[in-house]
Image 1 (cartoon, one colour):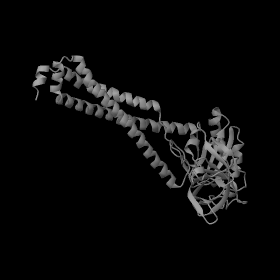
Image 2 (cartoon, rainbow, N blue to C red; image 1 turned 180 degrees about the horizontal axis):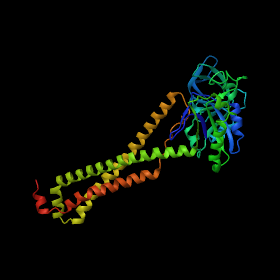
Image 3 (cartoon, rainbow, N blue to C red; image 1 turned 180 degrees about the vertical axis):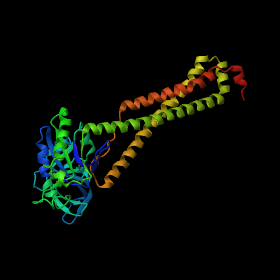
Image 4 (cartoon, rainbow, N blue to C red; image 1 turned 90 degrees about the vertical axis):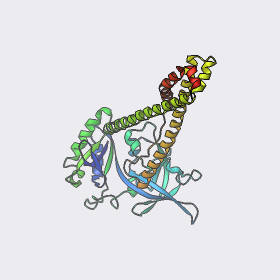
Length: 378
């Protein structure tokens, strides 16, 4: 579950401007009967990652998003360690995403033990040591797929009341406060119970968040089931839209092939007459033009697949670059591009089928031509 503050309703909305959950809230929610793990999240947008090349030579690259949290965050988001170890609380240590390891170039990869500097959006520069490298699991949950922390580090010393918190000035002892919590139920059957228990606690007087949140805000708990249902709704609309475009394209393509074939039959009328006069049968003429129509559909489908694949690469690359330009925010996972090979085969077969349908009538017309009249055609 994603726990935050915002607006409830059919389309709940999370607000990242309110940081109201304290360490006490994290501990108490973690002790609820149906909650397995809780991870507080301090989102830190990084302007740059800086690495010393030589004594007076420095290299810097775009930083992405850093999550200040505890070690449980990796398990909740289905991130697995590729090498190294997890960071320790209170130490200037971080673990980085495998893709970030090559941010300075494939010939200069970041590795375990390297010391780097990162500059936050507020200008503060911090030195840190890389102790581990992680990657997202292939079967990661939906929250893990939509969330893309490039760097994960401990809450202390990277996230405190000195930045990102509007509660620490009120609470004695400078307790950190967070805008987002990730929680995990003990099992799938306990998700609803975990959700209800969390809401009951957060709305009670025992909760710090209840006292510090805006009176007009609500506690929002978003589960994977809700995210999946919303994605399904969006995909259904997109599928209907794409289906309509595909049908129009197929009709237009079929009409185009038919027109070309009718024009070909007209241009080759005398040739058809000559072929028939030499003994060509009705079926021979039919097959001749039908094969030509099928080849047009086949090569048209091949070209369409190539153009579609290249176009999707360009669109995805543009979208991911736009995400990077934002500087990294919550649920800013990069969009991955996956092709299903069977759909290339299906698309090609559909192209051939359209060629057959569109070429059938012109081929039949050519086959029925009277050879005498065809030879006299001007």
